[in-house]
Image (cartoon, rainbow over all chains, first blue to last red; front, side):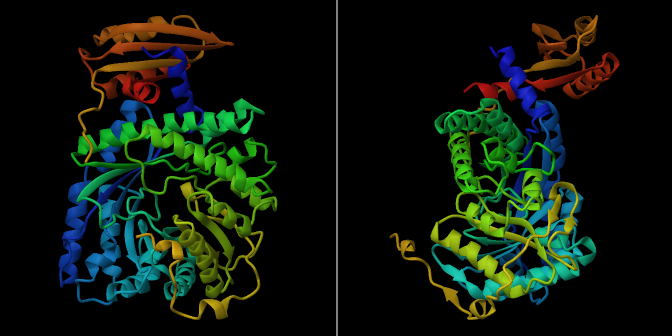
Amino acid sequence: MLTMQEILETIKMVQEEHLDIRTITMGISLRDCGHPDTEASCGRIYDKITRLAGDLVETGEVISRKYGIPIVNKRIAVTPVTLVAECSNTENYLPFANTLDRAAAATGVNFIGGFSAMVQKGYTLGDRRLINSIPEAIAATERVCASVNVASTKAGINMDAVLQMGHVIKKTACLTENRQGAGCARIVVFANAPEDNPFMAGAFHGVGEPECVINVGVSGPGVVKNVVKRLGAVDFGTLAEEIKKTAFKVTRMGELVGRTTANMLGVPFGIVDISLAPTPAVGDSVAEILEAMGLERCGTHGTTAALALLNDAIKKGGAMASSYVGGLSGAFIPVSEDAGMIRAVLDGALGLDKLEAMTCVCSVGLDMVAVPGDTPAETIAAIIADQSAIGMINQKTTAVRIIPACGKSVGDKVEMGGLLGSAPVMAVNPFSAADFVKRGGRIPAPVHSLTN
Amino acid sequence: MLPQNDIPQGNRVIISVLGKDRVGIIASVAGVLSAVNINILDISQTIIQEYFAMILMADISNSTINLEDLKEKLTELGTELGVRIDVQHTDAFNYMHRL
């Protein structure tokens, strides 16, 4: 029998501490949708997505009402489009992006991920075409998310792709200038990209995945923050233990919702991603958890250690609560989507360098950061190269989601609205890395890639 | 693919009432439930400072209305009484607190 205390604890988590299921993401394989004729291929893609995901949004809402827990987003991730579009005789992949956008609108999801390519070792014909199409595709659509994997521990870093992505991001910022460059919020550059990540903008349905699958991303920074606050000045062992217990409870909710959704839709349940994902709402912030641990501002000395403790405790608790944990599974530190991060930047406590250090111990690193509009593409490429190097050497996922804010400089703000929040423009290092990133070729895989 | 038959079944809900205490809260909620043939299995309540918290477990298997309509009815009643009334399936609590 449940106790009153337990019931009230759950209710409090949802009503006061913003506990929610951040996303139910349906992964759909499009590998049977290739066709030499672009229009025919797009037709197949549209039909398949709308057939499989037709009931996704409604199902999510039914489950949300049944359990009394908000399910914030319903989304779709598809096979990296380059694998499908390559069959077609076309240079421009814009029609594929438009098809994804239409299918997303028809099913009612707010984002669809998978306008993606994996080029860590080199480009195929289709990869090149897809990456060239990204700026136009992002500008022409509302819901399509693009991602490019430029590095892996096994392959090294494709520096040609890194440099090109610097230019792609700049170009997208210009094309979406009237939306304050917000198109760049839908482009992620990965190292070691996970193939079952339910979180946007980096979600895609990897080649090892089944025909159709349900993956779930939980959330709950607010819940963890309140636990840390309530504990007061306990030692680190106690702190880690309590965070672990909380992560366990939060993840159980994700497991329940994921399994129920999969069951109702008649598709397999894939994974729960146990990332702590903040929102711009006050109190739903990862930075505020770190501050509750005793840091005056997120970004000051000690932040990396605090984040390491948090991230590890979340994983330990989450791993016990779910049979299948996957995706990114680590704390997110997106600047624009986290009120505490924004405050830390505005107060001068947090900069790109510290975020890079924090990347080493958490999930994805430089996420939703705005930089001055006149930042050279080569500098953006160098930032991507640094993040990729951290991912490659430490055998972990890293990602860059960076927004060059057209016509803005340090101290200005970019308003993106909704869950994307607002990003203060951050300073980049003024010294050039152009000669470095333009060398071309591939940075070899590290010696510890030789594991066999 | 995971075994999917281990999703908890059953038709029990937790009805929670949170808000400022006043006369007649339990009576009104019980009235709504009995009108639609919902059996109350357990009630506990507590006053935390001036706030009233009531947790009620009920069996909705023989209910004449579905969960969605019940939620709507109780939300309406909550607005009338100036309290927040929620209905959640017990699985949400069992999954979080029991293995």
